Length: 302
Image 1 (tube, rainbow, N blue to C red):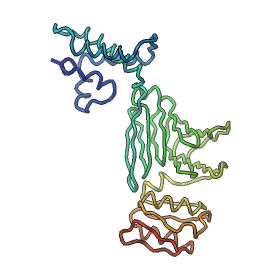
Image 2: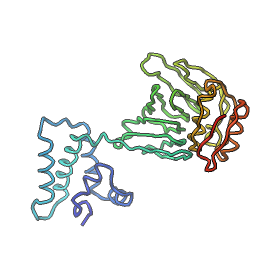
Image 3: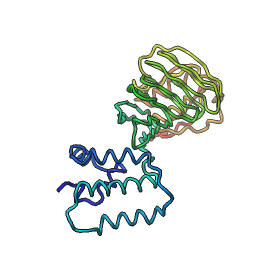
């Protein structure tokens, strides 16, 4: 007997994306999968009449759990699947999201359902719709990420500063506090500024930065983001932004920040694999003395 017939929770777990990789692979190779998947697609556009959703779900569960003992046919299972999927859709589970996060000093490689690839920098988060990805290629980004987008429908990255739209390209987005940058490495992207009719088209080697609401355009010669090579690079950026990035990469806390001017502009870089070298290459050129705690978690500015 097929697992989806013997396991009464199987269809609900499939509809909500909770199957293991092994279970999903086995199910996709079954004859019944096409029928269930077709129902799943149709259910997305289903608009049910007003019903008591709680009672409807209870009734469907009772039918599945306590129903007739006669042999269940594929037709019967398709009908049950339709009921389960529609009710789950009513509860909004088809709009559920999948998220990926990174900790301080961590990076993460992600492959989306359409084959598009994302590389998350430290202390970042990506969210996207769990179901029907190819019909709604929208992602939400907090932090920094590099994208390699497969051709297809519109691909939109939503951030706190606006939206970046593409069809197929390679680009990097950084959105941390007041720091916001978009760097296009291949193809073209469009940045629509939040709550504004202002937009910018970026092509290969174009980069924009947003500072105090003003957009700055520049050219780069990089083939990929510097952070993917283990280095952070700054060109006339506020010192506060530099310290924030050191915190993100090394999980250290700066104390006595109020004694220095954090708005001063810094041009330079630091490596991600040696904290002491990172502090020396950023603070010393700015004439800032410091002491690092023994456990290397606190930087005392002097």
